[in-house]
Amino acid sequence: MKLHYSAASPFVRKVVATAMHHGIALERVATNPHASPADLLADNPLSKVPALVTDQGLTLPDSPLICEYLDSIGGATKLYPTGEARWPALRLAALADGILTAAVLRRGQSLMPAEEARAATIARQKVAVFRTLDLLEAEGVPATLHIGTLTLVCALGYLDFRFGEEDWRPGRPRLLAFYDAQMANPIFAQTVPAG
Image 1 (cartoon, helix red, strand yellow):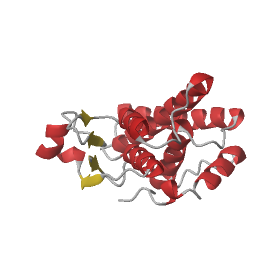
Image 2 (spheres, rainbow, N blue to C red):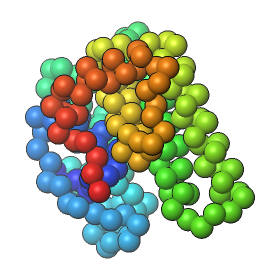
Image 3 (tube, rainbow, N blue to C red):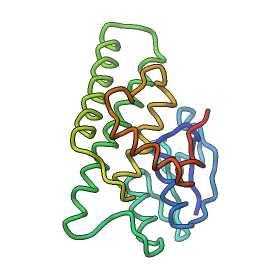
Image 4 (cartoon, rainbow, N blue to C red):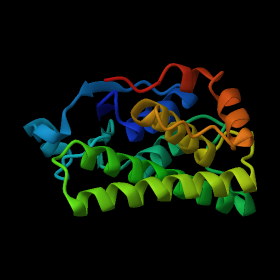
C-alpha cells in the first residue's frame, strides 16, 4: 500500500501509528500537499495528506477513513471497539480530531500576513483547543489504546510540535499522565512529528 505523507502532519501520524499497531507495511511517499503535485492529485483530488492507495487500487483520502480501513484488515487487537464501547471511543476520536483541525488551521493562519479577521480565527481556534483539553481533563481519559486515545496522543504531540511555547500541561495532570504513559508505546515514540 502507498501512503502520501508529510512527517509534520498529525493526521499522517495517526495513520502511521495505526499501521504500526497492526504491523502493516506502508510505502511512504513524501508529499507536499501545498504544492499539489500531480501524483497526489491523481490519488486525492483534495490535495491533502494522508492519502492511501490500497493494494487493490482503491484511494482513501482522509485519516479517519484510512485508520478504519487499516484496522479492518489488521490483526486481532482492534482499535475500533464494538458494542457500547464503540461510541465513547469514537467520541474521543472526534474531539481529538477537532483539536487537530483547530490546531492545523491556527498554524496555517499564523503563517499568513496579520489581519484582524485572521487574528480572530487564530484566537477562536486556540480557545477551542484549550476548552476541549479542559473537558478531557475533567472527564479523564482511559488508558486503553483505541482510535480515540490514539488520536488524542497525536493531538497532544502536535500541540507540543507547533505550539510548544503554549504548554498544554499546566492544570491538566490527568492528561499529562495519560500522554507520558502512551509515549512509551513505540507507535507513538517512533512517529513524533518532524519538519
